[in-house]
Image (cartoon, rainbow, N blue to C red; front, top):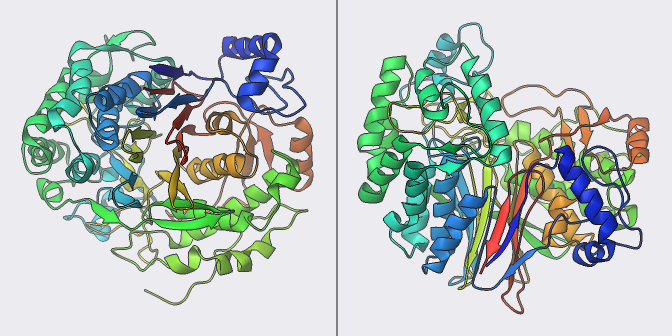
Length: 597
């Protein structure tokens, strides 16, 4: 078995290790990363500056492969594959394990989206397993409960929507599973019962999340979160063993009783009683009414590669819109991470996000103009708005015809099935609310609703809110090529486009494409109704030349270097159509791990 593991690239000792490796073994790094003539040079802060490099070799395997954001979850997926499970079985095992070992970005209290390459039908299929708003609460009732607030709070019961992830697991399993669910959940149950040592980045995020949650007055009940996620009153540290026996018992309920144990059985009943006790609006009836939706993925062709996304209520459409705009520019000639390249990409993001704020919503409630938004003709209309000499401020959305912290994982199996799955509680660990004795926190995705009744994304009973989490998939000439994702809120479309440009325009490998320095633009208008912030802020990761920052500033961007977790977290699995061999990758910024056999 081959392994690839990483940790937070911000650590100073990591920077020193990378620099030493570059100086000692430049020829090897050049061969692995495919670096150009100019070798990487010592940089500032947390990474090197110069030619692109990979922090580790790609993981190459044929019989099965998994790439997740935490090593124990990857091993759970591999164990399922080695038992004869499908890529979907492995993805469920990994996701369940992540809900325990990385509750800072996932869990049964959240939602899920997946793209699956089905080798039998030779098609990409999509699953929307996101939950809906409480049926018993109208917009008017919600506004009365909000009082003088002009937005849904980020935590507490008013932000909670029905958790869709578990129904997503069972929907995927019914269609593509091979092993029984009790075997698939066994690794997560064992780790929850017996304990596991925390990995470094998760420990950092765990402490940050719990500090924030315990300080918030809007959260109606915090004692359950304390009992579940603290040890002797403190967040567990890296290497400290953590156990969650409540979560083990909840997983065992699912292993024996299936999805009904969650949506019509004891889990739904417990959450109903908890919500009544704290005064929250979610009820057992909301769980009983829930179901996932198999959807037709949307796509665009970018320079010969078909890129696939889940349609709204998610933001995957923004990835496609950005690619359509960028196809009209010769990014390769501009140079990787040059001022021209970053400027054009940031401006394309602004245009796509203007439409994202105006048009993206639950298609069961509004008609989303998908065909126009994803069309090449529409991109051609909007592309002239990108000026090379000046950063745009708050571009307007396009006109349409009249009409009324997160985890990502990828798996692949010996039969050619590939899965891109993303799952989240929205803001880190979620709402702050842990129902009695269940061992997991409820999501706060309802914060993403708008309160203006005229907005397509306005809150309504039984409606799905706008979603940021998006899995990505790419085919080429009808063959699967890449299952990938970049976690991190609004960074996700931006990060996906950067990875694809790195691979398609600049010929990088699946590992190098994720390790390359990234940028992020913030400050566009939001689907909640929040207005844009002028030109916004453009963050550059250390590793981008200071001359580029200076030139972007000259063009009017509010640009700065900003270290930390602003740039998302990436995993990907690439497939060689000729040999069937997989190449897996994670990145250096978090605890990512890829393995194969």
